[in-house]
Image 1 (tube, rainbow, N blue to C red):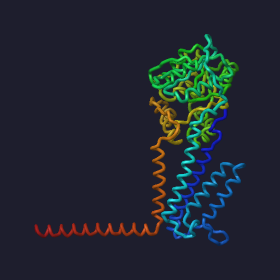
Image 2: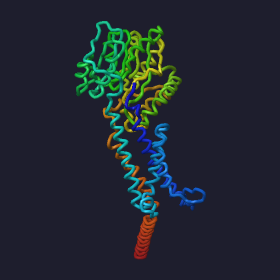
Image 3: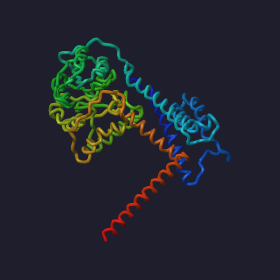
Image 4: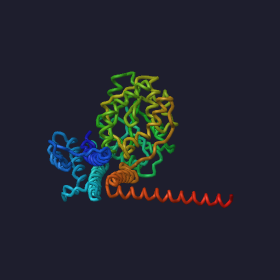
Length: 446
């Protein structure tokens, strides 16, 4: 499946933005640090000092020549070059060396803001334009067979924006003999209406939680094999065909699943996750003793599902992995890394670390104490980061840069020292006056 995430345009601009700010901050901090050590920093070629804006110009000119062969490297070079050029804005525009001037600071902030705006627009376009995610042609409606071979269960809560694409990918399956079930988990939007329009059997489950929703869908299914995915997930056209093939080739198989990639979310997360997903699952297998399966890409036999009692309704997180662990007692559980679906990365919209913090406590308790937390996942329906998060990061970065500039500015440093010295002198006078008053008071009473 091809998708907007494959173009990596926002990743390229993020590399430029990151290289730009890293270059400026490292250059400025090193400047302050080296001067404090009595070292005169600079770039020297054959004993001659070369202003780093010259090196920056060279990198900016070279970067387009590398885009055909080393695209990511070219974007990094562009960011580094822009950082070096704008870092000495005043010198290369007016040939006046005032490194710590306000105009240099404003030039850096302006360039960084432009790069950030371009990056955000590219990322917004990738998150919104989801129509290219699969080779999906329009279908009017699905017809559920009376005695289906497979049932597909999709839990959904307020997913009117993502559900049409998810159902379109299911209607586009090569294998047609399947029952399509959408479990409405108390939606207040058009989720159930959309599901019915596309021919899905809609089941209402008002007890909130994905475990309750999947359980209701699985119990109402008619197929001998139950596959499940999420309402924000796009499956490939051969998804069901591949699943059926696995069960036919292994008669002892009771559950099978695959991995997933993100079609939205931060570009670094989209680039990072596919490279570490399989190793992470292998580590989990070593710790827990068998494969865990993701709920967006798994299938089980109904017989085995009923034997183990289905999903643990007390869990609001990792209910899929818990089911896979219990299914090992009745048969084989397999993970196929090449069976990949595309899902939303909205839970990582504020960054990789913020997304991992949602799952990390539960996994640590599971691995260390063999217990599971029953916390609910926060409801996230927006693909882009919250404005407060973006504003905080921009403000923190700007304040850091302003502090470095003010620390290195000679005039400001002198003013700061005089203010501090004046404050100490004033404080000393207050203390001295206090001592004199105390002495007078003691003499008066003795």
